[in-house]
Length: 516
Image (cartoon, rainbow, N blue to C red; front, top):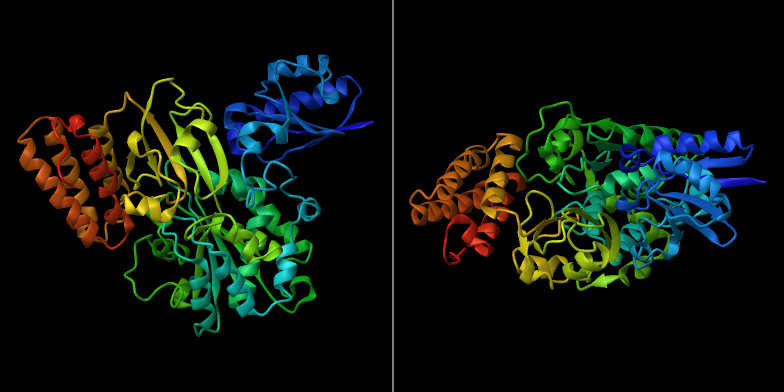
């Protein structure tokens, strides 16, 4: 009898010993003469339980975690291959509340399948969207994406269907699909998790996009800090091509699509689409003036779809199950699901894929379990280092693009970084400006110089130098950056600063909230 065991190969799991656990399991099984099949799957996203080992049983997969190398011997003694009892036993994986209460559409296969197996991907619903797309007209594919309500999951939340339609109708002998995998926002890891745990989902989404708009070449622009994702993607692309899903004649359809992975050079600004395109062309990563939009003149001056990982990876389920199926999730104009990422001072950090509409309160408490320190959560920064700080009194807000925008917050890429009541928000405001100083591409004055002056002004406020006048100066500087910067780097850096000033004035030495 052979036993099937799953040990994650995800970067997070590996960083805390998953490779050692996998080796120890193999050695222990060999020593006991037990036949096992060891599958290195992706992480389920329950990071506080990693490395989480799963064993396939007749009742379903049973999880144990967090497993250390020193636990392996006792697991075998407890007969964990037969789902035996052990202090680390978590029960049936799918019944763990953190996982059971999610709506996993994009991440349905992450942690379930062998990431590099074309057949395993197919056995769990993979390639169905592409096969359906190949029976449709280009206009029908674009229409399905439009009707689904899918919006860009990278931050701007621009309707994906409108972008695709623009590229479809644009004139150009060559068109491109570019995946923005330069996931650099603090507290975000959903792109990496998907690329390491279900790379074919991204590949399939990019092929569908190429077929839809008439693009025959795709590029994944990957941040250099993701070496494991880089290796996984390159192998997955080769496997997909060998199976006929990439190349000059996709599944004998007469459609062509090639795909390459390109590594970035560590610049946060290259998460901005035009800087990314400049970098892909071999130039310094600096923002381009718009117009023209990349959809009209993008990579090498040709019509280009630029979407991020989760946007493109959301496409296969739309084409497989229909636009109405996807649009049935969410609220208002925020349709479908988003992979929220819990990080910072949080008890249960990890990935939560839910339909838009749940509250921050529910996300932080029902899933996150409150703060790791046990102190009250004072604020969360949603949407990365350019996102505003949401105070506790606003945690009732539904996670919805419009509801957040109404209060001058942003959801962005879905990163949620929690802070307890020991945080100093004036210090965090200064850090936001310091981050802009470090990461600005330097092309426009409001961002390049404004951030430097911003650090200086906040320092003076914190030191008590002429606070009232310096607060007004800071607000004026922020207004200049918001309205004068070429891109979101300088245009959004003031958001965390102004929100800290608005909701936490005492941290700046102010007695009453200034008008912002």
